[in-house]
Length: 125
Image (cartoon, rainbow, N blue to C red; front, side, top):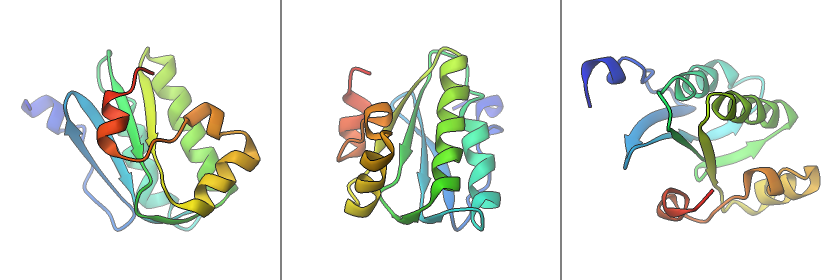
């Protein structure tokens, strides 16, 4: 990774960390995704959309315990920003309550969550 691209990676917080793997940007989110944690997540989602295309951004929700409508809005906004730049997104999520929320809101068809990071990196999206 060159110095310029490493400048795009925000400092990890207790809610999010960003890293590169196999030419993809992974934003791993932990704990709760809500208004209270947004300050620790937002910079990571914004930075992920800044990588030069072609880019793949993976939202890894593996460690997420709770997500509310504000959290969903953060993810939808981040996805839109990536798509607007010609990129693609994938999601890793196995947490049953989060999967149910995605299904209830119709976002499971938008994000199409996968069970592992490797599956997300290998998916033809």
